Image (cartoon, rainbow, N blue to C red; front, side):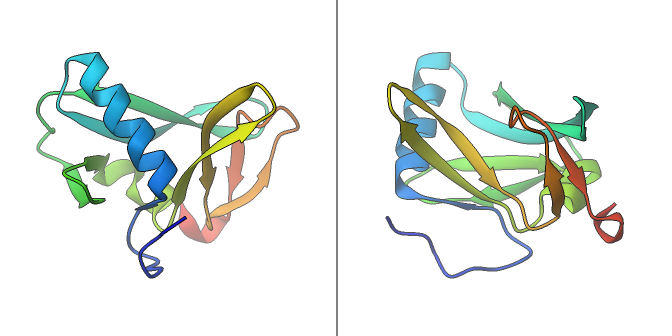
Length: 120
C-alpha cells in the first residue's frame, strides 16, 4: 500500500482507496469527490462524501493521484486536514476508513467522531 509522504496540511489516500474512489466517481456520472463533515451522530461530527461536477468557490483541491481530485470546503478543512483515507476489507464488508489526526475520539459504531478543540 503506497501513501505519499505524510503532510499534516494535506489529505492522503491509499492505493486501494484511490482505486475505489475512481470506480465510484466513474459509476456516479460525476467528475470529482468532495469530502466534508457535518454535525451528527453521538460523538459530534460525521464524514460526508458528495460526487460533484464542479467545485464550489470555497473548495480547496487535493490532487490525490491517478487523475483523482478530491475537494474539501474551506469551512471543513480544519476538521479533516491531515486525514488519510483508506479502503479496508473486513470479512465480507469493505468501506472507506478515515484516519483523522484531529479526531479525539470515535463512537462505538464508527459513524461519528469528536474533534480536538484546537482543530475547530
